Image (tube, rainbow, N blue to C red; front, top):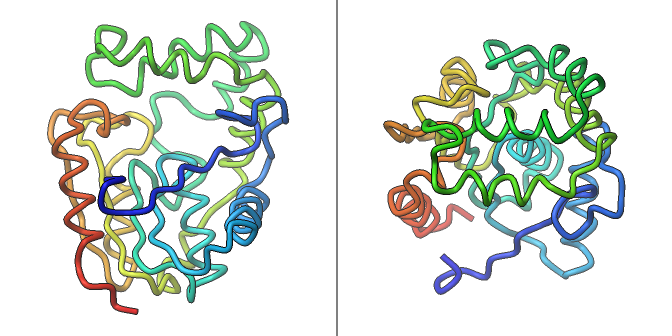
Amino acid sequence: MSSHFEVIAMDLPGYGGETKQTGLDNIFDFASDILEKLDKLGVKNFHLLGHSMGGMIAQEIALQTPDRVNRLVLYGTGPMGDLPGRFEPLQTSMAKVRKDGTEEAKNYTVESWFAKGAKDPDFSSGMLLAKEVSLQTFINALNAMASWSAVDRLGKIQSPTLVVWGDQDRSYIWSQPYSLWQEIQESNLAVLPGCSHNAHLENDRLFNQIVFDYLSQDSPR
């Protein structure tokens, strides 16, 4: 992908290279944070890909700044922040993490992201990425999702959109990508068979090809 596009992988506050900060507790502030970083980099227009909670942030960015997002890829995500049908309710996850701590919560959460669970060869790398996430950041993320929704605003998204979903995703069940696909005016849907929430790792060649082909189309702007 990076050989054809200038790729900027953003770290959210509380994650990746920004774990010294505590993660934010609402999607709107995450969207503002990303836009501020892009402004500092001098990036005016861009394609935008968001995964999971990042997909919620991407929806918010597309809604707030429709003139800046050329093409939008919403992957393993949806417009319903309370995550109906998730492998367990968000409130249950909050109670568990407060009781058991983040290590146990990270283990079963990351395991749920792979169709093969902990047997997936990328499970250990997923755990490494989650290692530095603090208890408060974990809780804030659950609260951020639970308090957000774009269900009634999807028709306002103007960017051509690709919805990508693994058919064994236990975090975002079918009603989530289906809603995106049906309600966003100019949208396409790609379903990756045999994949869960981390399709980009479970079938990286197919995932990358689908995204590359979509972003390589002539820009509508």
